[in-house]
Image (cartoon, rainbow, N blue to C red; front, side):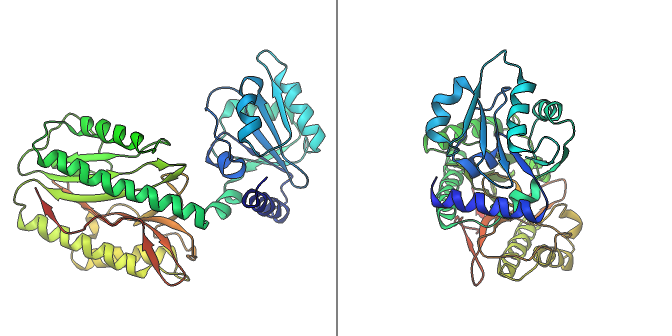
Length: 367
């Protein structure tokens, strides 16, 4: 096992001691890759890692996947099973060996009920709880290697914005949905293969913060927003830029400039020692001062890392103190029903402030 994963196991087990957790069950989720370096195909088969408070973890793995797990997973103790085996007995044998059958077991948040039910059958005397905070504390602060992946992911999303805008500018008759499919194919050709979160909206569709792409084609007079991103080598990016097809109204220009200012002020407020909620309020208070806060219906940012949406959130209720290495979006927006404007970067807290993984211009571009 390499040093970074040894460190992560050590930190996880330290937290388990502090929270009086006997065992953590890690499902086939980003947490599995984070802890083991293993990211198998996700299907209905039982595949988890049991991490005891003390001692080495055990991987429960279908024998048909062992050819991959024995090479890619850093857990040396791998117990295989085949279809038709007594799964309750199989799981029970592992938990009894670890001494956790009647213990306190924390489960991965994304654990499917069919998997949890099997573990509950094998451990009828155990007490179960969510293990979210165990992994959140580990994953919120990124290492230099993780930040390097997010820088590359951000570069790809900057390029994607330009590609879509060029396509629209050249008179493309592709719909929102067709453009989404087209840019996701390009993303995959660049190695971004861990999922996407792409929203493309034209006209009144921009008035919805999370518009669902449809068959609308961009026409003169339409507002546009592109919310693009995905996972590159397990690390996500997220960028939004707003544009206009043809000369925009004075109202649109005014809203755009105010959203740009709100985003700039929020970004400037990000630094170690600041509460996450205070960054949100910087953006909200500015938009409130210009009469637009009623059209700002969401938090200023969400965590970005191995998932497109994770912790920490820049929301009015989050009193978390920001620390170097934390990564999240910074994305105030205004949506009045007729049109919307959002400007978003994925950013990282540094020792003295913040850095952005996105560098695409925030000037209002009229196509």
